[in-house]
Length: 139
Length: 97
Image (tube, rainbow over all chains, first blue to last red; front, side):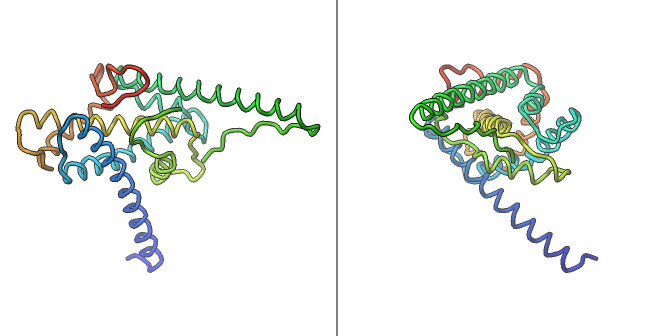
């Protein structure tokens, strides 16, 4: 028999999940709309809802796997290697994810280079000491 | 990084993952979140394709019952080898489907 506190907690978790599901549903809807307008077809609301439900459920599997991969590597922070491992079962998917990862890495390099340039430029203008570049913030 | 069209927001991906972590200390790097957003997008596109493939056999609008029959195929996304998916045959920078 649940205590009142446990019940309230459950309800809060439930409504939090509902909000997340709604957010997923919105994104899935947008993706469906893109495909639909591309191909000149339509998707029923039930279809979008079903795909959205499946996607939400799949996140649980992904999350647990990712956590396990990171833990196996004795890390508490999940990184891109863990995500790549998730995509291992399909060769073509793995290839795509690896390429995307390289795009992200390349983008980071370019962004850091620009930041460095900007800092150096600012240093020329002002006499003050430069601050060290900030690292990636982690969630 | 340019991305055309709909995508999963980093913040949403983070919340979705954190919902199911067993350990409070588990975190996700920013880049991993971006990559997961891509993976989720592909998952959805694969689901759409599955729906359309089953739809091709029956011209009526796809309903939930049909989708349920087709859902096991989505498991293939994570367990099949050499699966041709909507992420193949891309050119330029973007995969539309």
